[in-house]
Length: 89
Image (cartoon, rainbow, N blue to C red; front, side, top):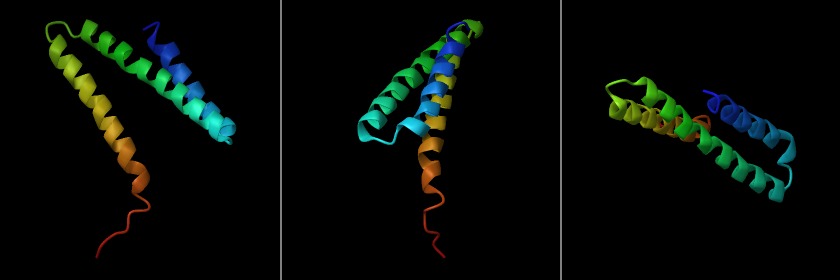
């Protein structure tokens, strides 16, 4: 747990820094790369915490956490398109 909180806080900090500092293309690219680096550190940490607490079903727990990440990625990828998608009659 000591690693999960700082990793999530670092990701949140980079996301907040994107708002004021992404006005130039170089800064935006660097911040997106930093966001990817910090964001991808949270998944293995949380998965290892879940597997440690799983008891007799570590494989099931690992699969469920990975599925949860994939579901979040799919929902996040689809959600920006919703307001702009034309509705067919």
